[in-house]
Length: 355
Image 1 (cartoon, rainbow, N blue to C red):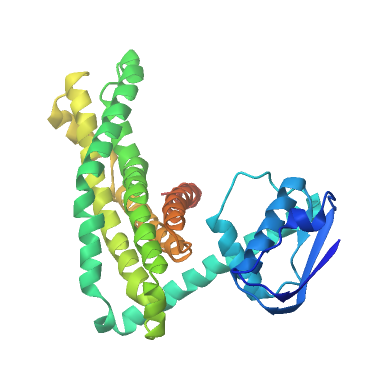
Image 2 (image 1 turned 180 degrees about the horizontal axis):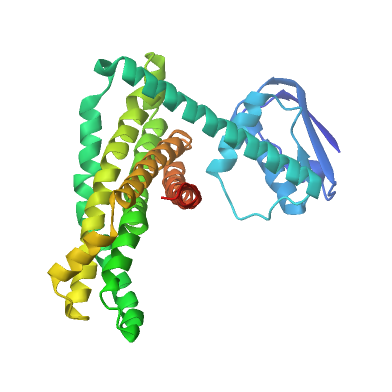
């Protein structure tokens, strides 16, 4: 069925509904045209929204390709603001759904690559013109993501070291190898668990905060104002946050390593009756500079990934309170996913290189 709209559409006039227009018919496909429309306002959008939602409920394919792009853009905003639990539109066949998903994935990949490229160019400008960098904002963000995160990082790292030492003690004491608890906890914390736990804590704490802050600024059109003034949002908002995380993550990882080893030492002293001096000497004997540098390099990479994920989702946020919330959630999920994937890649690379 082809529907041709025309005339003048005003919100003050009587607005037709799709159910009244089509009667009792349920076509399998509806194509909308509006070349004959002279003037229109939100009344036309409400009619198209009613048509679109009715088609979703009935399983009818609604083709709006002939509708002008500006009208479709406004209709998308109206639809996102009135999300309901209507059944999913399954009128498209499998191949069409796969094609649309592929196009969407390609578009998102291009956005990510473009954002990373802008960050690289911004970092290049920082090296060439450091006096134009917002050092005050960077220091403020370093305090927020570094010093203010110490309590939660301390608690998580201490408990992780304590749990690992206790679980290892249950097994090793059966063989009289109690002292090797220090080896297991020390290597695990320094190479993996210290940077990993600090990164996951910051992904949930700082990554979400970055996305919420930038998303709220986008909703308030502050980012548009920066662009109108000729100021790059990446230089002004993104780079100070990424630099702050890149600097503070290795320091937090070092702190997490020490607290995690302290938790293992407590278990060794209380459960296994290992003197703290013996535990510390055994830990020093098994950990070398390559283990420490491996963990710090991972922490640096994790910090950069958390900053990129949080800022990217903030810039992609919709201009609404719900959009800001979804951006914060997406930032946490994206950051944790990138942390796990990158840690697996680092494990393969370091094993190949012999570290």
